[in-house]
Length: 547
Image 1 (cartoon, helix red, strand yellow):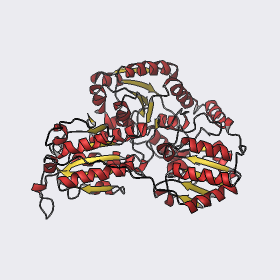
Image 2 (spheres, rainbow, N blue to C red):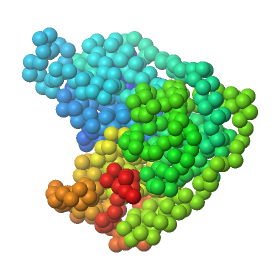
Image 3 (cartoon, one colour):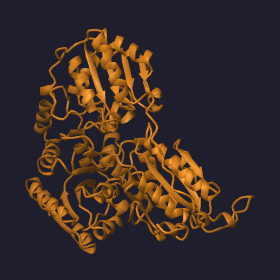
Image 4 (cartoon, rainbow, N blue to C red):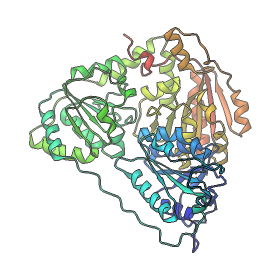
């Protein structure tokens, strides 16, 4: 860095020294100092075409790698445009740091807005609506201190995104002090009395079911969860964020809890133990799943308190609590139990049943083709679309962090911009979409091409909003607003220099994905399109309570 860097440059240097390798954003009249920074080290800035895409990309990078990322936005419209993406990230536990300029401090009036370009009465309030912390720096010292605190929020536990607003004139000021080093704070220890209570619950329960969520992934506690499952002979369910945990393990029920064969396990159990999950509505049919009488959870965050009644709730890091629990169970003589139910046929039976049903057979074939042809080391990002609902719920995931599915807040248009995140660090990424979702972010095709990002956009084109069309059919409503003009995809791809292939049937999908992945490895994005109307899966709310 130069002898006297700007505050913006000092912030980027601070982020880079503490593990932030990528930032996503758009330059604007008020935040140009971020782009003017002359850095020795710092995150690489990926320029996107819409601020919402910056938030989704930062979220996608975290879900794929566990890395913290930041968005660099201009004031007013720029900050407002990222709110939907920040909401999805915040609700899902992805620690996206929003760094936005605010109008110049020297121009502000103490009485309130006075008509400055991009001025808002309180820009940070948009982010506080989610429960996030919004920090409003007014001096260069506050700007650096606020970034330090934002990093600490992002590291957790629990990991949380936040907003930092900095006046444009402050961003351009010189920074002459040292760049601070931030030590990480230890995770809060589990309450020993609560761990003892949980161990006693387990000791007196012979039919335990484990429910694993994304908190197990972020805590690096997969093996501890596996050991507990085998100690208890407990079948293992996963939330969407936990997909890929215990891959291939004989105790894993590798299918959605929404299917009757899986849901039947819960009332037969005498204890449900949730690990690292908020136990949210989309995973639980809005908490109307039949559950055993005894329920316990180990997870961070306060949302879980508002879901169901818990006999024991431990709010701590999953790995820490499982370590203490393992020692107690050993002392109590709770040694390896035989599985109380054989779960190995469940996935096979579900897939066979669905493949035999003419309504759902094409969707199962679709899932199988992607599973067979997209490499395990590459990422898959799903949108809110029928084909993505099938893949998100019914695919067999070989590892954690491979699959992303935006059911935290439920934002249509997630997949295309979110794929920029993992692709920005070289991970070939499959974005599974309908034809509606990409329309929210078509400009990001330019980002894929300009940055040579290894993304394959996989589109199931059903001529509109297929899920909403189905909803209207179920409710007996007229089909209005759901049949849409969709692009001529090959021409659209050519406009950005992206080769596009339309597959005539599923038999051609595997080869098309193989060619696309090879191109991705060369840094070339691709588009693959299949024209089909798929019947929705039971993971979608209109089908939750079918008999």
